[in-house]
Image (cartoon, rainbow, N blue to C red):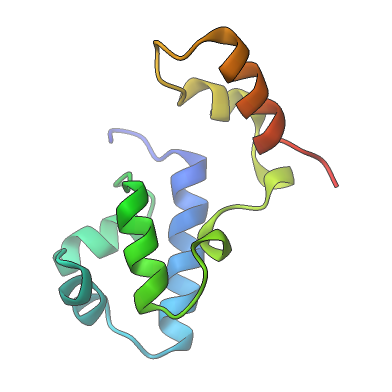
Amino acid sequence: MSTIDPIYAEIGVLIRVRRRSLNVTQESLGQSIGLTRTSINNIEHGRQALQVHTLFSIASVLGIDSIALLPRPNSIDGDVVEKNFPKKMPARDKAWLKQVLTLRE
């Protein structure tokens, strides 16, 4: 990633806060899920997008539900969300997903 996406940056903060609260090093987290310390560092700083299975693996190692590592919906800018949708996603699906991800409390 050449720029830091706000969604990944926030996910990274949530991972880092939880990891530190458990006194888990980036090295040991990475080893637990098959990534390098550098990859964990990049994920925590929003420089590396992570796949869904990686998010689930990180959550499992950190002893939490994966949903706890996702940004709160009202903290996500709808334009940022839409920018990251797959190009071939049908417009109806994009509209639904954008609505779900940007719900306001």
